[in-house]
Image 1: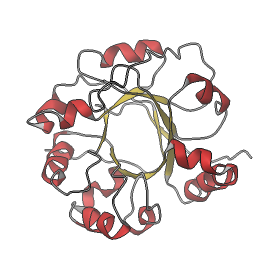
Image 2 (image 1 turned 45 degrees about the vertical axis):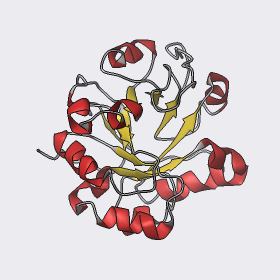
Image 3 (image 1 turned 60 degrees about the vertical axis):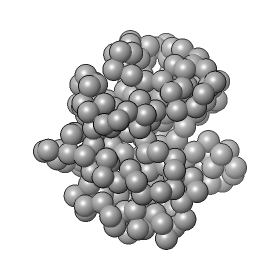
Image 4 (image 1 turned 60 degrees about the horizontal axis):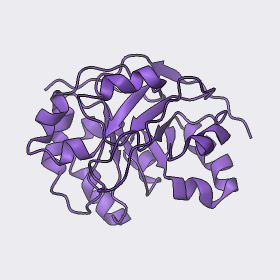
Length: 225
């Protein structure tokens, strides 16, 4: 099934996407606020063990002004309740039901939410190359910082025919982020480099400004520190 939407493309979103720590505690909330204040353009809320009640508490603890910059990895109904940016379909959800992947994206995109997903192989990415996701993660590109022994695969998608922006994930640092744009990626997402740092906001600010050609349905306003 094909979908058509009135989609707006942001051609200059500065800085990488940040994915939350997977821990279910709320200890990273102060750092998340500081990251937004530093200029973080988009936060993926990925805490696999978090219950819906905990997710509600987590979102309520963040100032409303940042909600349109948050993408959910679960408890998708909260996107509407809290006016969030969109939803992310992890690989296990995408592959669990063909019907879901044909229907679920349209259900949310019709409401103005972004729908993204994740890939871990170029072959699988190619098989979805004409799907109207708003963007997708592909990784690990470099050796993972957050997962020991998770080796990078040095993906190069510069010659691929993919209909949506692809975001590099895995081992991204200020030293290699510029290189991923030369291999066909539209931008990068970070996790380990940020959350292993003593000062996550300072670690984020060490990244050079990079262009992320991300399809953006809800207008994300910049927030000054």
